[in-house]
Image (cartoon, rainbow, N blue to C red):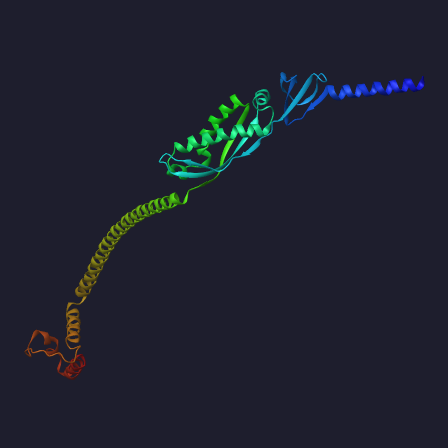
Length: 304
C-alpha cells in the first residue's frame, strides 16, 4: 500500500509538471507571439511575459521583433538617361504585425527575406529611373533613399506585417563604359568652375588694384597739397626774416647779398665774366677804402 501510494504521488507530480510545462509559456522582451488553435490564430500580438495556453490544443509561435538586416544582392539599374549604375544596398526591417507576418510567411524568416528583396529591388529600380546620373552622384545617399523607404514601408506593412525602417546604399559603381564619360564630364565641370573662380579672382584683383591706385592718387594729392602749403609757409617765413633783417641794416644786407653773389659767380674756377670796371656788380669792391684794397683783392681772389 505504501509503495502504491508513493507511485501515485510520483505519477501525480509528473502529471502536474507536464501540465505546467505545456500550459505555461514565456514571451521574451525581444519577441511577440500569436496563439494558434489547430493552425488558426485565436490571439494576436501577445506581449512579453508569462502566459497560459491549453495543452495540445493551442500552439504558440514567437517572432523576433528586433531590427533585422537584409543584405540585398548587387543590382544593375538604369538612370533616366538610360545609363547603367551598379548598386549595392541593405535594408533594415522589423516585424510589427505578428499575425499578418505569420499568415504571409508562416513565421519563416527566410520566406520573409525572399518576399522583401524583390520589392526592394523594384523600389530602387524605380527610384534610380527617375534620376539622372548627375543627380545620383551629387545628392546625398540618405536623401536619395528617403522616398523608396517610405513607399516600401507602407507596402510591406500592408502585405507582410513588417516595417521597412531604412534602406541604405553601401556603394554605387559605374560600368567602365560609363565611368570614362562621367569622369570626363566631372573634369569639364571642374575646369569650368576653376575658370569662373579665376575670372572672379581677377575681377576682384582689378577692383582692389583700382581702389589702391585711387587711394594712392588721393594720398599723393594730399601730400603735395600739404607740401605746397608747408613750402609756402616756409617761403613766407623766410621772406619775413629777410625783410626784418633788411629793415635793421639795409646797407649791410646789400653788402652781404653782394658777397654771396661774388661767391656763387666765381665758385667754378673756369667761369669768365666780362664787365666794365665801374659796373654795379663791383660796387662794393670799387668803393672799398684805400687801406682795404689788398684785403678786398684777397677776398675776390679767394672767391674766384
